[in-house]
Image 1: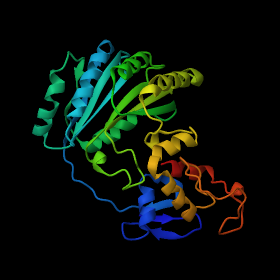
Image 2: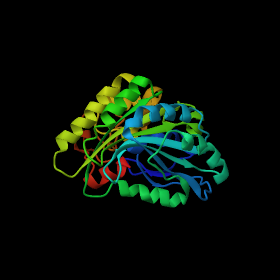
Image 3: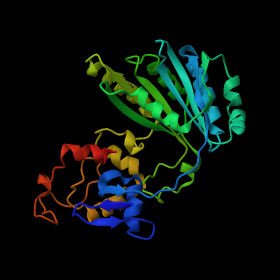
Length: 315
């Protein structure tokens, strides 16, 4: 990747050039500079077996217990999410969404146990275009609507955690609010925790509590999100994939980077000692407040990134 640092240098970061920076950017977000170009490996993907199977919300506990066992045996090619949501027809429901990136025939065999389970309201799993799946996801978050999200990471879905999910998922604050359960497995879990800055490499479930509304009652919808997060807190960890964090304090950032945090601080000291790139899940350097900037003599407290830059760095 090509990256512009805080002092204006343009660097190439790879396994053989500035390898420390290459390590840190893969998980460290926009803390070390602005990446202007990536070179990465692509994988050819043809039609995939994908879609969702929808069940009545009254079956949510049974569905989530089945989902727990089903995901434990999922092959690398199969990604399976669960969501407590409201259908387009206004019916509270629980949906199992999946994508099998491999031969359709193998996908049908992998999905067969799910299709045999229970009595679904709808089975929408079929061969689809991978590109169409990605673009259709945008329809769930139209511009103009308000959103608020919190997330937890659970090593397993205990019966007690499932009970909490069902209670709050059955009482979503609006027809667009939902609880999304994302299973992390496969190749991502076979990378060592210290091989990249992203440390959370164990098989896990990321729980996203997403409130969405257009009625101007943000406090009510945010309260639902906070209450759900607190109910799950005893079963999860403080750390979570940093893209799901809002402005939640240094403690959650540190927990999300775990054993890699101090190494990231050392990188920050080297490449951005004045914390110019601070509009992110920030890794704070150990520089003292008021020390001069290396390039122009401005103090740290005066280095404020413009609003448009904040948006770019959060991506």
